[in-house]
View (cartoon, rainbow, N blue to C red):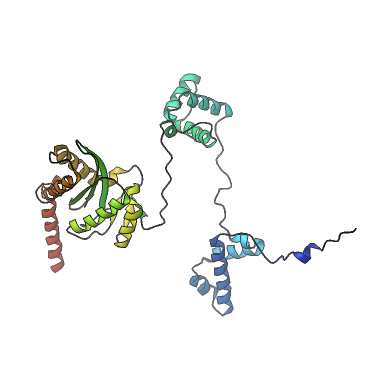
Amino acid sequence: MQIIYPRKELYQIKSIDETDYSKIVWQRKEKIDKIKLLLAEGCTEDVALQAMNVARSTYYRWKKNYKNIGLAGLEDESRRPNSTRKSTWTYEIEQRVYHLRKKFPLWGKAKIAVMYKRQFTEKISVSTVGRIIKKLIGQNKIMPVRFMYGKKDTKRRIFNGHAQRWKVGMKAYKPGELIQVDHMTITIPGFGQIKHFNAVCPITKYAVYQAYKEANCRNAADFLEHMKKEFPFPIQSIQVDGGSEFMGDFEKAVAMSNIPLWVLPPRMPEYNCNVERGNGTAKYEFYWQYNAQPNLHMIKKNLQKFALFYNTVRTHQGIGLLTPTQFYEVISNEALQSHMS
């Protein structure tokens, strides 16, 4: 029996491209088509490109790639340089560093560089040792120091919601701007641990406190409502660290209040210095001297009394030995006089 197969061209449709392309490909294809349509309608090339917000060189590059390759030519091109830096060390040096790091798994590049020179009477730069260690970690030949300490890798936060990454140089210039918010854990004898939430205005030093049993996003959202009631001025923006308590419900509550939310980079407490200093004040002047009933209701009640004392009685060197309330009144009157004049 003879089996006859139809020609390939009869059962394949060449014009159909079933490849999955990224969203940016279809956006670029749409812009190319619209530019062609505008040109066909009599628009000049400059007007068409300006209307689609596309540079001339970009348009011709897309057009050329699309003509030569098709839709695949509209994908983002690799930004990898044509010539990359080559390793400046030999395999022997790499093996020496490898064995030193295996012997001293908690040592960093600086210590290993010193030990390398001591053991092999040959100097090697600290940066070279660091690059070798990075390569060995990437090849899973050695483990990073944080793994040896039992620390987990933390995922980098993706800012795809209301919160935005804090920008270097951001600074408050008026009351209510960039309110610094943080929390700390305090142990009270006879009760246990509580989570102290603190918010400080960096201009007036006005502080708002609240105590909770847990530090989660629901309690942080509740603290936001407490802040809005207690501050004598509107909250214009908030900055926090990257803690999970300032995500979820807290971020949603800030968004619903139309308040910008800025998240500090990790391990940068100096940018949150006012609230960090405020945590120390509450710790030493309130919690370490607390002698009332050790239950959450009484702790909250006495904490609000301390907050009132802090804002209306206690003087602050950073604002000329005035209280936060007095200082806010002074700058408010100065602003009113300058506006009237």
